[in-house]
Image (cartoon, rainbow, N blue to C red):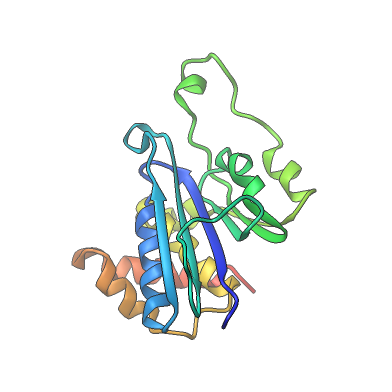
Amino acid sequence: MSEVKNILLCGVGGQGIILASKILATGLIKAGYDVKMSEVHGMAQRGGSVTTQVRYGEKVYSPIIGKGQADVLVSFETMETPRWLDFVKPDGKVVINAYEIPSATILSGAADYPQGVIEDISSKINTTVFKAAELAEALGNIKTMNVIIVGALVKAMGLEEIVDWNEVIAETVKGKFVDVNVKAFNVGIAQVK
């Protein structure tokens, strides 16, 4: 693959976006790609916006994705999606985890959670929506939502056969959480037909 692929992941602090990106980047490196990853935490510990950028290909010179360059935008939280939509290529794709985390402004009653976000974005660009939180709860651990999303992304990009992802997960997550995260990854893969 000579063309560089760009994946932008966005969400809210505490959703495991950085771990998700590390799993993805580790797998891509093991598959022989040149990989660059950058992360922006912002006020992550306070529920603020978090983004990571993963770029991979034969040779990648910069970890930064510019506006209009992302092949895929993966949103872990619904309201974060429109904030990063400008980064998606005109023919790019958006994957939205239909999950709402109210901001402090919304929790205080000063604003309402925006309605119609998914419908608006779906009318403009190729969009896939699923509910990773419900799938994670069915596994008995809501914190596996991020790995479910990685599984879906890997399948959607045709990367499921490039490495042993179970091995990548075993190397990336804490030992006692390997089994549930392997299950979560496979649940994510099963979401993409």
